Length: 113
Ligand code: 5GP
Ligand code: ZN
Image 1 (cartoon, rainbow, N blue to C red):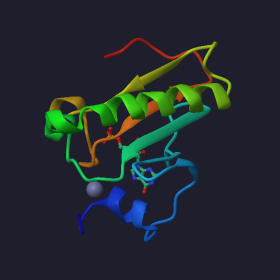
Image 2: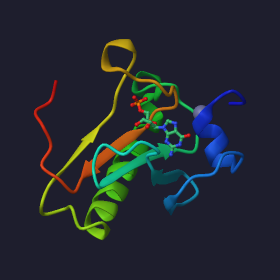
Image 3: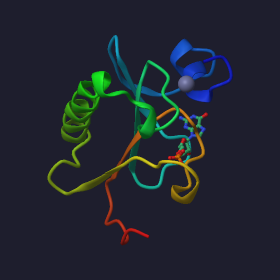
Image 4: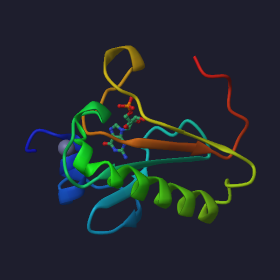
């Protein structure tokens, strides 16, 4: 999608600190980290929100969570703990409309809002 920030990151038009990449998924550091570890995981295919992933593509979510497991281990937060979340639409505070999973850890996190 031409006017999407994360599609531009996938295309390399906007720089990012990549931590993982394969044919379907990219993971990169959040530009405004909420903890010592804050990584975003995105499908390379554009879906605006979690609502927009069709049933046929749901296995992609399993694949993303598999990569979350791997990166949590590699960044050393798998045992200390971390939070994985997906914001969807206005009430969640979603600001980038290319679906993404946050992985936040490396410190004690506050309660969820
Ligand atoms: P949302 O609120 O949509 O779930 O979160 C979007 C996230 O994208 C925010 O945590 C924000 O810091 C991050 N972000 C916004 N613009 C950029 C950018 O240009 N590069 C990177 N690496 N992260 C970004
Ligand atoms: Zn996009």
